[in-house]
Amino acid sequence: MSQEKPTASPFNRSAQHDAKRAAILSQAAKLFNYKGSRATTLQDIAATLGLTKTSLYYYVKTKEELIYQCYMAALQHHLRQMDAIEEQYDSPLERTRAFFLSSFDNWLAAQEGRGPHIAALLEIASLKGPHRKEVEASYIAMFKRLRQYLRDGVADGSLRPMECTAATRAIIGSVDWVFSWLHKVERNRVQETAEQAFDVLCRGLYAGRGDYRPASPAVTTPVSQYVHGFDREEQNRLKQQAFYKAGTWFFNKQGFNGTSLDEIAEHLNVSKGAFYYHIKNKEDLLYSCYTYSQDAIERIYDEATALPGSGLEKVAHSCRQVFHLQNSEEGPLIRYNTITALPMKRRREILERTDASSARFGSFIRQGIDDGSVREVDVKIAQQLIAGAINASMEIGLWRRVDDLDSAAYDYFDIFLNGLLPRE
Image 1: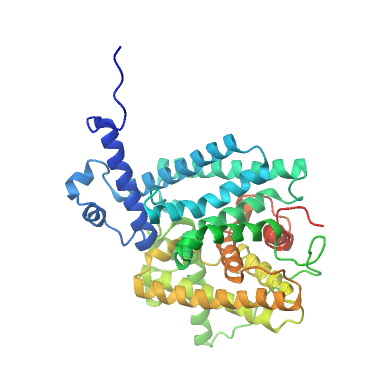
Image 2: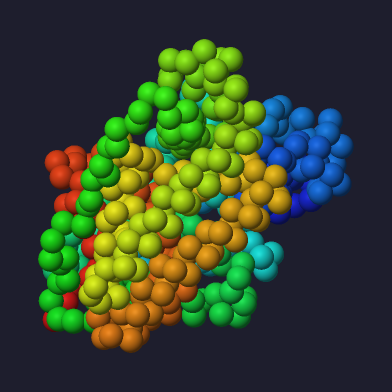
């Protein structure tokens, strides 16, 4: 009786083709995550694999096609992991835990050569037409499955009542952010770090009994100031502010490659000449959008620092203020999805300032531990989880109905304050 050849046979051309394609997607994902799609060329990818550019064209024709394939490979990887999780676990909590921890193991597996590099889904907005629709459909499928874990847990009482759509968005924001900070952790501590991160998610920051609920609305509305018509300096500042706000919106929505300066000028109803008088080029605008957002966040932290009250109150105030800024006419803040479009020198400058700002937020958590309002947690892990969620908090109205921004902010950060598990 004849036997089929094993798929791993060196003579199996289909298996060889699939293996080579997988290697290309893994290497492309690694370079896109580190250098960004803008700075990575097909020649770069070919060279690191020892291929000619012509050989690479056999598998992929354009960079957009490669980005699309990387994102689909990443989402298919996540969805296959969810298939395995659902087969292995019945408990909603165990399913949520396994999904959360898988992001840490995916990163570690790539570093150790046990698995492929998984593309961070940073520039879905820059894809066009059918590519974007297909990637978004797979992303939404992943989102809905995780949300169902939470809904099932709330229904059976293993998880505390929560607004599951907001909580799902916050969790995915946290795990999407892992690639940006896990390289700072020693490899032999990655699994321990993952467990500590999930403990923050399970039990929240609040050290007291019952649910923590901020006493009063945190949102403050900026007061519009009268600008004298002859105050040219202030007029120019307001124009630049309008450019940065519009640029941020377009970069967040369409990615760096998909954003056109002419389109922004048209959106603001200004002539191209007037626009280019203030804005030199697209890279400069992106850099200015980052510094504009960082200035805004630092003002919020200054305000929180000056407030009386516990460390946890300062954490909650900061989160809600940033959320409001992200989702009001005063925002949005820049999403770090476009950070890899900046050259390395500017990127380092932005990230160093971001780290310093995150440390300020971490100081509120540390103050809470000292004053007893926050339980003992690893401060750096907690601040990174919340930073990832903040980065993903823009346009929450696309995911759920928002009647009141402050209430939506509470729903969004609830799991970081009170956790997933029922409280005593």
